[in-house]
Length: 192
Image 1 (cartoon, rainbow, N blue to C red):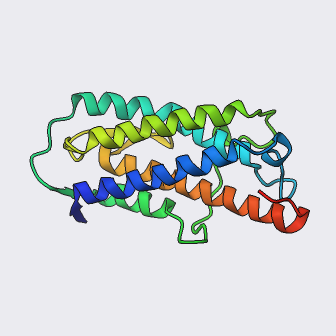
Image 2: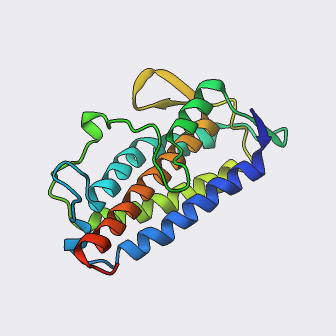
């Protein structure tokens, strides 16, 4: 799939900016709201954010390193790889629905961890780093460099596809948080 790289990255940047606004609003909530669980095995808000932080710890340094060594872009079009495009699209939620439900790997599942609101500070820092990464990516060849992924050391994806995948992953869990807040409002009578 070929797309204009500037438009592609502008869309990703817009998603991150919306996420940053949402996380800053979440930061104002009391700890009890952040730890609210829809049901016993459902993640709470802090667990969703901590899950994203775990992925950020892996991918952000990868992106920073690859962008430093990436060549300057030579064309306006970005051509996504078939596997990277598949992974990115499988992560993308529809407007109000998370499709393709999939369990998180055990080491990325934060269910039941004793988390505090400092998780939010880390999330904000990581979103800001991702915004810088997307800005730097505007002038780089995102097809040439390949990024390792967490699910297999044998699979690498184009840098642009991996950035796309991670930002769709962020969007997926921010929708999950939105649903937690709506559930809390509806069932507990709490205004968020």
